[in-house]
Figure 1: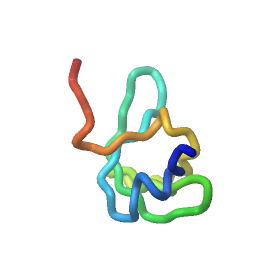
Figure 2: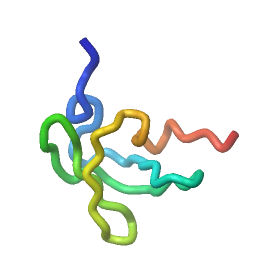
Figure 3: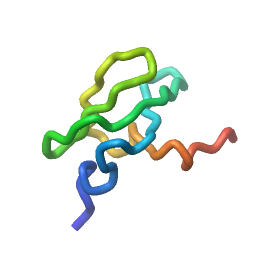
Figure 4: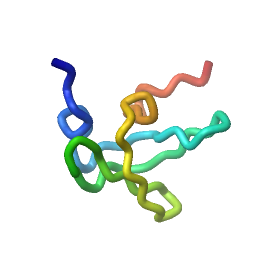
Length: 64
């Protein structure tokens, strides 16, 4: 069985979330709410992320 987002991204993890139109925004996981995570972006907004394709650890980012 695939791991859920809270298992992959502990609170405090630096991440990027996809907001569409080729825009990845840096943020930090601030809370878990199964099956998703809450991410606070650098501009102070909070996002409820449920889709594994829309979040990645910051060090996984590739500029290609």
